[in-house]
Structure formats: structure tokens, C-alpha cells
Length: 224
Image (cartoon, rainbow, N blue to C red; front, side, top):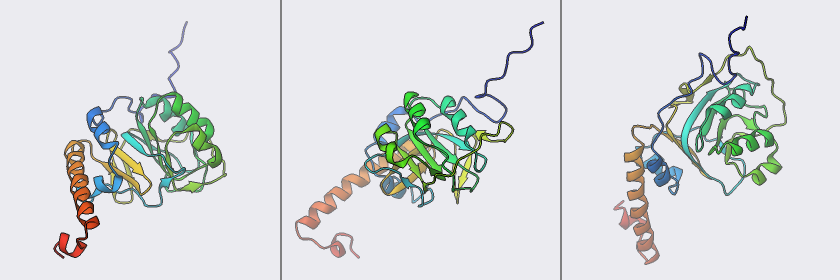
């Protein structure tokens, strides 16, 4: 007698495959806005740990979050998340506070790029720093580490559950934007109005810079 079909390694009680995402129009509008402007326009919200920076210069990330809570020193749940995520999604990974491992590298970047993912934001380290630029996937991490990770089939992790970075909770489907200054996460429900406010802020700052170039003082422009 045939037994039950084997369970997919990308399904299970701690994996949510279906989530609500920030809408594509909001993502497109946010893609040209600085992370710092989105943070300010949202009321100074959503800043992820400042130690998380782009691994290679010149790349930015913008898209809906697929959240991952990974056991420390293990990257099996990151492999699984690559195949849960949809094109354009950004993996946002909490590594249980265990930073000094190379959770991600050239092979996983290539797999994620083949899936059309938008990038990786991880509160931990990655490896293969010299070649990640050539792959071209935006990666934001605490730094580089050659320390290898395990792949424990019995270790418990979560995909698309809330993850906490210091005082900021990132929910699956939230808007995540990162550039040279850092990474900001904007709650999905607030994202359209925050992006609109950020666009207005950028236009106002453009006018301020014009006035400064014409000789006005910051003290007068801002009425300090």
C-alpha cells in the first residue's frame, strides 16, 4: 500500500506560504526614495539595527518582506525561504542573535536571483564578499564571516512570522527599503501614505537645497 506523500521541506506548521504583501505600485514608488526619508516621513519609524549595511556598494533593496526566524549558526531555514518567497520579495532574517556565521553566500545568492527575489536583509553575517557584487543580488548584513553553518533538519525555525529587531517588529508583507544609509521597514498598512509623504518631503528638500545654493542660510530657511 502506498504511504502518505512526503511532506515538502518548504511546508509545515511554522511556514506560511501565503501572505498579504504591500502593493506593487507602492513598492515601485518607494524604489526611488531614500530609506532615511521614508523613516522620517513615517514619523521616525522602522529603523533596523544600524550595524546592518549593504555588503557591496551601489545596490539598494526594496520590496515586500518574507520574514525568517533562523536558529543561530544554521542556515537551512534560509534555503527553505528562498523557495517560499515570490519574485520581488526581500528575505528579512533574524538569526537568533548569533551573528558571527556566514549564513549566506554565492550559491544562495545565485539561487535567490534565479527565483527573482529582491534581496536579503539579515541580522547576521554572510560570506563570499568578493563575488557577491558579480551576482548582483542586493544583500544587507552585519558583515562578513567565513564561519560555516549547520543544516539541522530537527531545528525549529519560522517563515513568515513576525520578527523582532531591537525595538522594531517586521511583519510578513511589510515594505522593506535599504540603501547606503541602512534599512527601514514600513508596516504594510501604512506604506502607501508613508511613501506619498516621503515623496512630498523629497520635493520640499529639493526646494530647500535650491534656496541654499542661492545663498540663503539654513537658520533662516528653517526659522531656527
